[in-house]
Image (cartoon, rainbow, N blue to C red; front, side, top):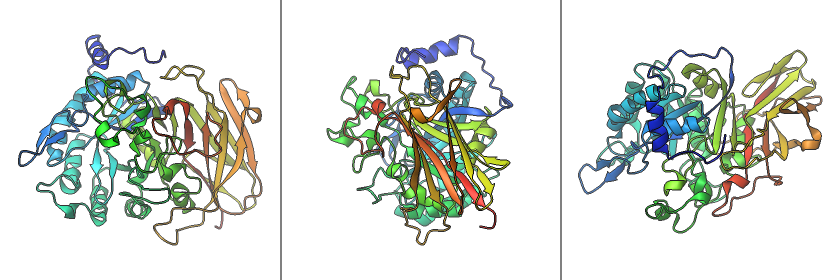
Length: 490
């Protein structure tokens, strides 16, 4: 694809709508074979409203926080190569009505306009006792009604006058219990979990204790967090008709990901990027806790915003067939890898012991003392990304940690056994057609472990804190979700 040669998004939308695209999506489409599908579960439309607080109750302002119609987001997501998206608007008092009566009908029209994009309904939940999170609804005839029931009862900014009793950690657990009672289980994924953190290993609105409590309460609903948050286009921000709306928040600075206190690390939240940190502590308990990467798109960087279009920079890849049910199941099962800057477009991590094997998100049943043979296979696209660059993977790291069982305390955010078991450069891998292949053996495995893979186009051994106004295109990373190795008798 030729990068940055797109027409204005409105022109793209109008062209698509008048050139004969089918108005009837095939709701049961299946490709019969799972493949890596790129998506984004954190996208705002004009129904992420602003508020006129001079009225009582405050009056919603269409386009006050994010500006694009849902169909325009869908068109641009498709233009940038995505296969699936989630509409995730948030707001304020009585926003549940806005989602139900305005955003959802527009999503239905968007599904007709862009039928080859699998579009979910959801929201950015103003999470009780924490920051934000995605709620992703299973596709059904009553998906909007079920979401309205949750948002109207539990979204902490829903009531007017404001009610602090809605903003508590126990209330979030009540919300998860209510979600468990729905006919089909939604997904909850924490957004930008450390954006309010003041320092490394210190946390703000979202803390390890809370995320463990969510996962304990609803392990098949609260399944993960954004590893790479959105708002990564701060280095591309430019004045449009007026100074960027983000200047009021950044006060002259341009922190990557809008992490204005403690920075992201290689574009990733510290909960993910810190080796032996919070994510590893969750995996070390054996928790199925996954990471994703999103745009958090509100306003594109070329129009005064700090955001990339969905798919322009960050991708969450799921191994699924191209339909709602398969994609949601893959997200729930952790068949996911994430990347920035189109550094890779496929990643296969296979662990084998004897005649059994497991892949990303899966569990390998091995015997104590087995050798575990690993095969890492990735596709490094030989084409420009959406910045016009053709980045190359300079190194791949195999990360291993022991599975030691429940943490001693719910606030634990370190896992000392985590280590980089091997680093691979191009001299250590071989070609298999278009793919790069790495093979490695973990000898005589005596205890349960998990393994995960990351890679970069940089020479940094560990991702470093991101500088103000950093060009995100020059600092790219990919991460796999884990493979668990479980031993008989453990």
